[in-house]
Image (cartoon, rainbow, N blue to C red):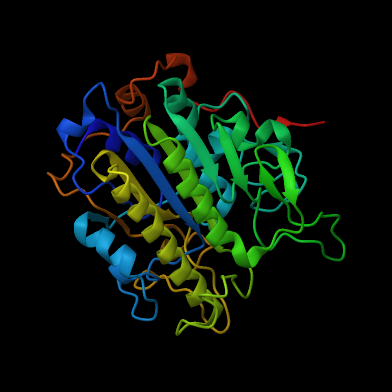
Length: 361
Ligand SMILES: [Ca+2]
């Protein structure tokens, strides 16, 4: 294990699955060839929804293999049972309240379309730190930390962005002045309404393209995938629709498994698997549905709540060398391990946040 892994793990403050490269060893971490990072995050996937953590409903052979080759993180908690606050912590290493995103400006618990607030452009994110260290950075998937230009991934250290800016269920409805769900490339809408059935497939294609393009330089790929998402019937490509034993939820989970398989195959094909740390996780537990869709078993409770099932997420990673020695994962320590220069005044651990969210108006 290494300081780079500790950097990422130190920033993950919640439930997740982690997958680092097959043999990410000290020799791969020389100054001349810093390792790549791939951070994949599903939306609302439950603790017990994949094979490595006990699912017998969903076929997840790629995640099963990843867990066998690597390491399962069996105690991993996010900071919230809902999207926006959980993701704010993932990006910043701060509790949501420190960055003003513990609730939305409209009284809800997550940001809604055309929200006036978002993650402050001056916050320090994983992407900013790594980009300042020479990394190519990309965000591909569901952002949900602000849909207005000052808050988009491109303002938070990502060279490129492709995806939906918030949840897949936030579409036009009576009583809400919401636009069609947009698909963005960088800061431009390229499709509205987005074809949600194809999101997982196209996220995967974008990810592969990014990896291939940046194969000769260190990269950080953040891939917050939109599925299973927040609708009553998650979306999937025709190749996966109706194929699982658990309806649309299961179809979407099995396509997510295909997706990580494609990403890992790409890393192997390009010879990058020995110098890439891959982490696979969920942003919170599965929400309660009737009839039941996702499961957080054996944890109790559901996503969107403060129950353990809403926050707890087993995580698997492949770290075939030695397991990490227990070390305090303080934010400054791990940021320093990433090598990019970090100003001490950026950190507020142990203090109240000096600023709330930015406001567009
Ligand atoms: Ca979520």
